[in-house]
Image 1 (tube, rainbow, N blue to C red):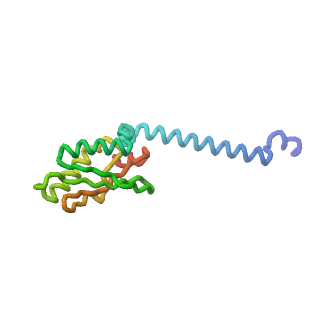
Image 2 (tube, one colour):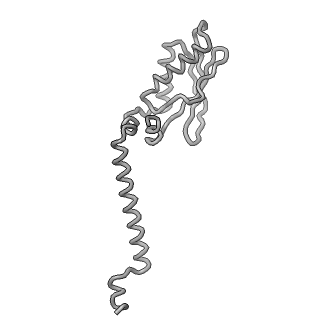
Image 3 (cartoon, rainbow, N blue to C red):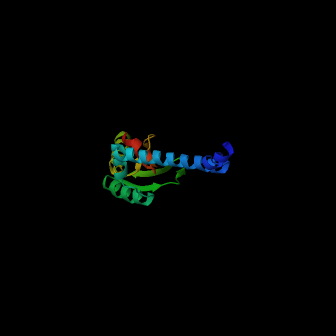
Length: 153
């Protein structure tokens, strides 16, 4: 009796492995859908999706224009650091010779933060350095939606 019903009601080893694989795929699919649903309701993810995803050339043009209005000239981006994330070092000159080091650094930081506020780029936490009218720092590009959402959570 066991032999008779075994073929009818039991999987072979190959069929069993395929069934297990399909069940695992279905459970991953359900988890992915639940996570997408959660992210669609999360305000941090909504805000992250609304940010402009700028390329480096767009950031360069945008910053050059806004920095020139405030007396910062000759913006130059250096070779990017391609690691876990993209970091782009930059150098700019302060055209206003009467501006003190502290004021120059603070004004540049504030200006960059405001210009990049609605984009996927941010000034890195090491801030702005100043030497004889040259200001330098690094910009970071946030590429994934998860990284951007962390900024707002």
